Length: 348
Figure 1 (cartoon, rainbow, N blue to C red):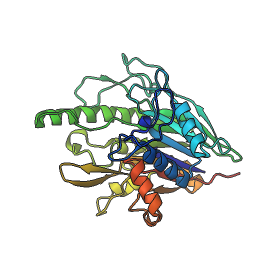
Figure 2: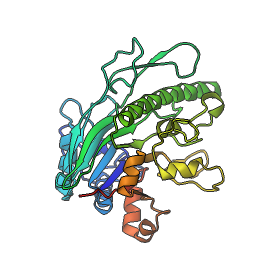
Figure 3: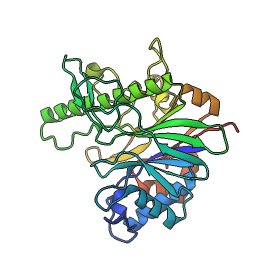
Figure 4: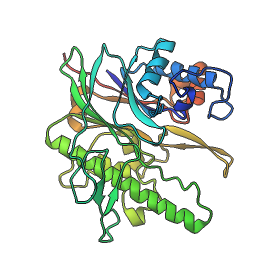
């Protein structure tokens, strides 16, 4: 089966407040892209990637009349996609929900959140993701209560017709953006604050990873981490990136590292190149910048049992996408992120 993670920028803006699909010539929130162009591009990408389950980061909003599941199932029906069912977890207030579009003939999914409910008033190990997490991130002797603006999606996945079963945690961790800062001092403080929040979220996720590994559960952690190994610029203050925390480090004595080959390439200082899953225009440098932000991490037992094979569907770096002009254009039109997939072979 094929699992994908895909951050679809401004997906929610392709739907009305009552979940009607808006495919017209009005501008989308993508630069110089109409809603029709973006919608058709997203559908082309999904059809070509052909994932049995696709984790959608920044899925359409749930709130008042808006409903994530209704919107995405409407989208799938309109374009005749086989990923005709959608499941989501806890709704949030950011208009960027977390959901999975899937083919119900291939997989069965259950929203199955783990952990105790916590208000962050006393320390708990891996509380439920829609609560609060009390933790001293910067080791100043004071524990702070942390929360997810987008609580991770926890699923129990069964691959039909096989013995395959695993747990999945879908995430969109805190961005490090310093938007709104007016001075270098404000920018630095905002960067540190956001980094502290992001690391707390990643420590929280890693605690859940440890609990699931202790239980012997095969595991996938996927999504947009807004981060990469050695990519935070604040290693002197925080030592490790959020991605490294969630994956685990091989130097740890009791290491139970998650497997993610793209992140592992980034961790190797001898490489003079990096993988990328996102492409942004920088007004400061007047050029496009590439970044590795999206990952699919597998527990070691799941990786070994399924002969896992990863792929980044980059419009320029992936040869098939580069040589398929329509697919290349669709990837660039649909979003500023590109899908990441992993193929897993489950025994019958």
